[in-house]
Image 1 (tube, rainbow, N blue to C red):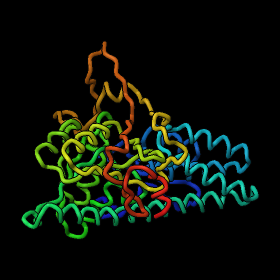
Image 2: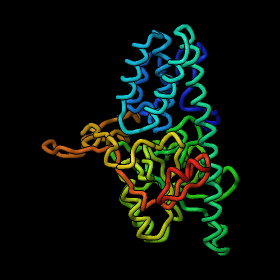
Image 3: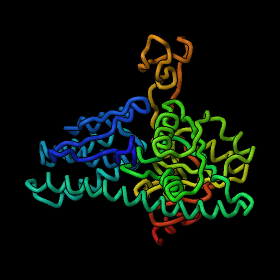
Image 4: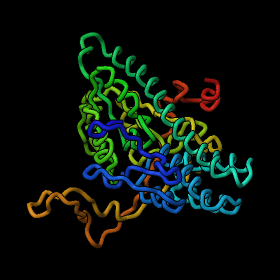
Length: 368
């Protein structure tokens, strides 16, 4: 996507062919910088420290992390150790395990002398596929937007489509285009009017920091709102559709996504507003039907207790500063994700097309 007139992807193979470049998302939106990953350990740190984040991008980064490990040591033991290290870097997003398994299987079929080449080829292929998948999600989502815009009646044909999002499921969460934001980009680039309500997404503020950064870079009208404003906006008829991404969706269609998603789904259901989930095939965990089995990442209390931002004091020169929000005596609890039951989901937008929720969710997706 575009940043200051230049096209960027979130991750790329460097010119030396043996290291990997990424956008450092922990510094956004006030500082744009990149990092070079030279080892599997670097990739693990980038994932766990959220230099890279978003389920699809975590998967691609893991694939490249395994490539980096194989370049150092192509032995079976090295692959097993690297896979285990990557797997535990973040537990919730299923794309990570999916990518590790895919690359590992390819490596098990070839001689050690070929493994570095195969790992690089497969990681690159996963990255390319991710771009194509997100483009397809954008195409199908565009068609959905057409239906929703038309259903509002001819008297509102010139009004922008009003979309509410949660967290960041844009191109920063993937290699390019994104999942939930891909239809918005397609819609905007085709000259259609849109306005996006951007949930701030506490405590790490991925909406305020990342989604808003993306939309501003693309010139898309948007406003950042506090997480609890979504229900009010829906009650007042100011939202036409809610669209989110997912870190892991069960085989029956329950959706694990950033904490707060469940509350948006409840509000959408109560106000009869369509609630859609945009996801690639790789975000579905076919091995799990019971969503209570999904490991929910419990993150640091510090993310709740402190907040970081650009200082506006005269002496700060706009540098980043950290402030404490809660009393010194208070503790916090910080689950990173929640579960939205399939009964609250209007439909799924995949690279294969639309899938309706309900019985036989997995069979429906397989048959597309």
